[in-house]
Image (cartoon, rainbow, N blue to C red; front, side, top):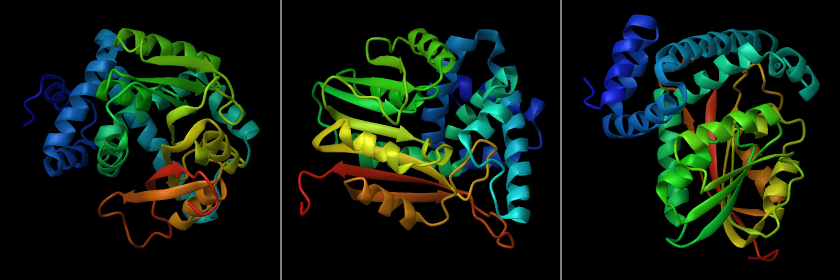
Length: 306
């Protein structure tokens, strides 16, 4: 069994509260013991600093509700070959305007970062292929569509010389995320802004940028990549992720091929330095669509030929 305090308690609580989901998550731990232990311990301690004694009911019940909803949405997608919502207006009405649903959804997604094997692998890619490119010096960055702020927190946790302006369109999300950041002593490194990720500009161009799992929530995602490009210094690196053929209830833009994301990034002006596509192991091959998560390390080109 895991030796880390929070991770150990996580498995004990999970086996009691969500026995049906326990085997897959524990198998993920066995396959990636060191990374699961390190990331899970870190993220659960951050969540505890914010939630206190509500840690287990909030996170585990949130995970159960999130996975149940994902499974329903994916099965409907298999039948109709269409995502449930086609516009931001639809998603707002059906999802974002429901505060209780959004809290459950938030903590469910949070847990998948280390509990889902393909998300854990994507995090490893983020560490190895993006963060390792950044120099050990004072840097400023931008996080477009920051949500819970978790990716900005990973950056700050890696190097206290790096600061990030984290942008999210939801004022409520910004308020809650600001509290979450403050509870974990990252306020000096992360500045939250309530603004539109498609249009927001920092006063000065940035040394790096991230935008994680926002593309699939947009009607015209190339606008996001173009704005990310416009906020970076020439030669700066960016990390972008997206979900492919994953029909979660708040996903709008359907991406079927990895090449679609690469072409979109190139059309926005980036050089694609590397990419990584991760999918759940042993996903049923009889199904039409394979839900997966893709990450890209991008670099802002300095001219058309470079």
